Each structure stands twice: as C-alpha cells, then as structure tokens.
Image 1 (spheres, rainbow, N blue to C red):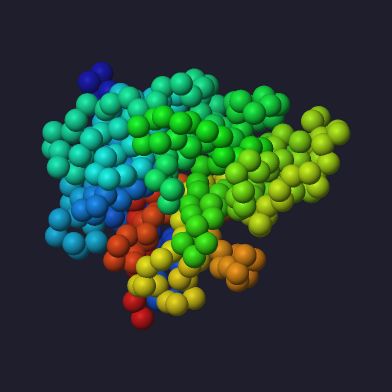
Image 2: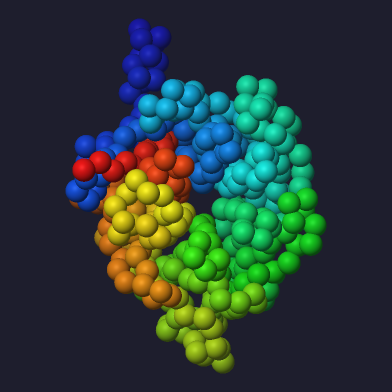
Length: 362
C-alpha cells in the first residue's frame, strides 16, 4: 500500500514545466506557430550555428542545449546537452564556429561545436572576472558587427547606486581581452541587437520594482554613442525621477527611451527581422519577447510584440503573439526570439520548456 501511495504521489506531481498550449495562442492572419522542441526545460537565449544548429541557454541544472532539424521539417528531432553543471548559463552566442556561453561571473567557449555535438568539448574559460552576484547576474550575450562580444552587468538589486561598477553594458574581444564599458544606467538588459540598416545597438531594459503597478515602464533604447547613460538609478522611463536617488540628477541629463514598453512587462530578448518569409511590413521590424510581470496586481506582458520603425522613430508597437496568459493564469512565458535563415522565427519559453517556430503562409 505504501509503495502504491508513493507511485500515485509521483504521478500527481506536476512536471517542472507546463506543456505548451499552442491552441491558446493568437497571431496575425496568415501566421502559424508550432513546437520546434518541447524538451528544453527553462529555455532562455537562442543562437543559431553556421549549419543551422539552434543553441539554447537555460536555467535548468546548468545545461546548454543543441537542437537539430536534420530533415528540415520544422521540428528538432534531436536534442543534445552540450554543457552542464554551469552557473545559470542563460546566454549563448555563436561566433566563427565556436559557442560562447555566459555563466554569471564567467564567459566560456565550446570550440568548433557543430563538429562535436555528440562529443562536446570541455568549456574553456574566456573571461572570469565579472561580478558573482546572481541578482540580475545571468547574462544575455551577443557579438556585434565589430566582432566584439557584448556582455551586460546588471544591477545587483532592485534599486541601488553602485556608480559605474554595475548597471552597464561592456564589450570584449573574442579572446576575453580589452574589456571596455559601452553604456551606463542600464538596470537589466536581457536582449539587444544591431539594426542592419544603421549598425546601431538597440536594447531592452527592465524598470525597477516597488513604485506601483503602473510605473515605471520597461524601455526600448538605442545607443547613439559609446558612454551614453540611460538614467538608472536616478531616472526611470526617461521622465520619472527616482524618489531615493533622483535628487540632483535631472532626467534631462540622461538618454530617454525610444519607446516605453509598458510597466513590468519584463521585456527580454529582441531581434531585428531580416528574413523574407514574413510579409513586407515585417521586414526590418523589431520583435520583442515580454516575459511577463511577477508582482503586478494585474499581469502584464506574457506576449511577443513587434515594433515597426520609420527612420529612427517608432511607427507602431503591436502584439504579435498573445495567449500565453489568460484570466491571470500563465502557462508560458516568452524569453527570446530568433529568426532562422528560412525566414521563420523561433520563440523560447522557459515556463513550458519549449521553443516554438512561427511561419507565414497565405
């Protein structure tokens, strides 16, 4: 009887992630979403290799995944673990055959990874002197058009003034040398990309908590020059002085956001769309994954948004995928977006432990 009880209890325990519920998702007419893989617990940042391998960072037991779709049917038939036991290896970036992985205080690299998916190399240390705090310590990483690896250092708190030691974006050479600061006043960016037409860096930033349900907004920012300061912890969303740190630091002294994304939406991964599968109105647009609020009275976010630009200005900001949350209950939380060479779009979901593929067909 005791063994039966144990078995029944084991069967009744919910899995570590919820099953995808794609029938609840709403997309614009002509768009379709399918599961690319539902075997990626706590999936976070996405990166694509030269041969089409989809690499996925995660918060699952320090694992990094490699997904392959050898028969090109739009679903990964093989899921491999290429690294494990790392500290919050959320960020992944592919560069010249190598996979770079963030692990809080360290940047690691797996050399020639696509030739060794079944026998992955031991991660090599590239740089190991970032702060060790885990509060905003996991890192989205990406290589810029300058060939350098960009690495954020988030604020180790909800709100604190650490001068220029934290709340900033840095960059380094691929071998870990020449670490330099790029921008300041960035509380926690978990997504950035370079606009192909201008080469300028655009990034999300998560606003502070505990100022109420409706302020401050998360931000979409554009870096116009190295050394720019975006306000944190003195000014939020470009026009709200912080009640504790704002005195003597007027908002006019800092770069305002290009767009206010909404309060507590937890804007994370973003990518410019350069493919040709989607209709022309989406080309050059910016897709943003909004993970969703964690302590707002009424939930916000839990969606993928699309930002269309007209020159340097925002022309529109609209929902692209909704339905991850209904009636204050969320079964999924989008984390990152990543276009594939065929023009489809991947979306990672750390709650459902899945990666989805969005396609367009008239």
